[in-house]
Image (tube, rainbow, N blue to C red):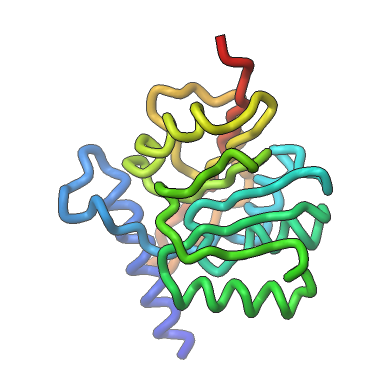
Length: 192
């Protein structure tokens, strides 16, 4: 079972590295694999965004729900996860119940590009560059001044981040490939 999990993680990371190259092949445009954000990275993302109990955290492409669940459990924040994979949505709901935060979070089976993010004060992403480029104008149009956007590893083209943190710990992936996680933060400013 562990070998099967290692193979799935290796395959997912391979997709990430292939799809992150520029330009992304057209056949990969609609594929974003589920690669879980390590808990320490999720914590650092939420800390960098300054999440508090007064925040509403939206995670676009929420996978198993770990970032939204972590925001609720560690900071008392409310949250919504958007995930297109129905099995991952079921898993996220189950994990939220197990962690005792179902009253603070919800998970929607929905394409993240169609989400209304207006209620969010913090948006988290671990998506590929093509997705980030598509979501940028939506975030800039819908988010209120003071809202924060935090991305794991991937930049948002033509939108300079407010802050970038490279984590010291290097993760060794299956197959020996090494990866140093980056976290990028943007703050929504007053509109001119």
